[in-house]
Length: 133
Image 1 (cartoon, rainbow, N blue to C red):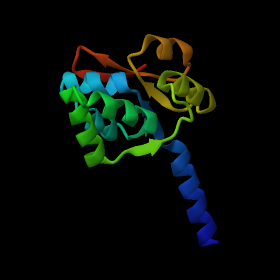
Image 2: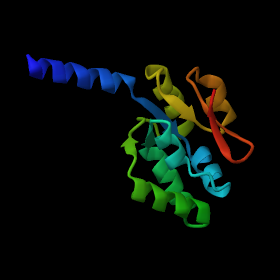
Image 3: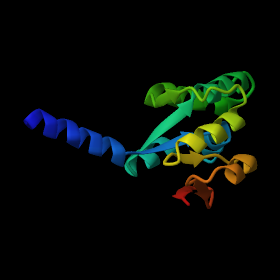
Image 4: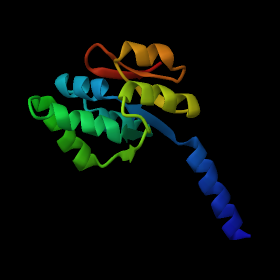
């Protein structure tokens, strides 16, 4: 009987967890504006998901972009959950993923992603603060 109660409480706590899916544009802008998005989101109890396709984009940009290099260092250090959005085009992949995961918060500065997703979104306010809308 106790084991059943424990598994039910795990299921409930898993259902109550909040997740945010980060896009390349959001990560790079936070780095540029010195916003510690990892800590801010963690303090809000939000778990970070980063598509492996975003990592590939960052790795390509890191050759010439110091913010992308710093982003990769932070990602390796913080070890967020890496997911596969099953699409080489990151924007289309995020849009498709959001349609099947309506509870996921989307963090992107891309106008098309914002327009095409109905999920809650994280925006940057005043170049220093994150806000869920």
